[in-house]
Image (cartoon, rainbow, N blue to C red; front, side, top):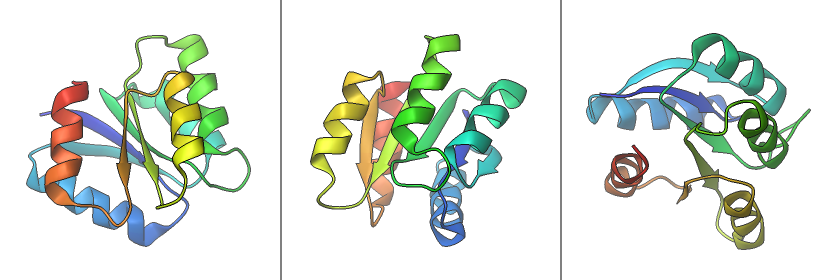
Amino acid sequence: MATILVVDDAKFMRMTLGTILEKGEHKVVGEAEDGQEAIEMFHKLKPDLVTMDITMPELNGLEAVESILSSHPSAKIIMCSAMGQQKMVVEAIERGAKDFIVKPFDETRVLDAIKRVL
């Protein structure tokens, strides 16, 4: 079981992902709506893993990944992207994200990605 911070500006997506994670016997320790909130919660909660949306207000997922990894190089972050965001996914991986999952979420794919990254 891993502790996970779920980051997405859409509450519905956070709830959907949270349900999948709990079915996989993981614990959602926090939720953030934007990159800035994600950074603050990561430092406070120190989760085993972060699922990070790419497109968000305030600070996007790419900037948040860079910020978290600059202070915690061993942080494990999985990007969440919509179809057609391949360029941004590649950029996120180059910046240090460990994997990615595509919306709409497939339960098996999400849990497999988490298992791989942990």
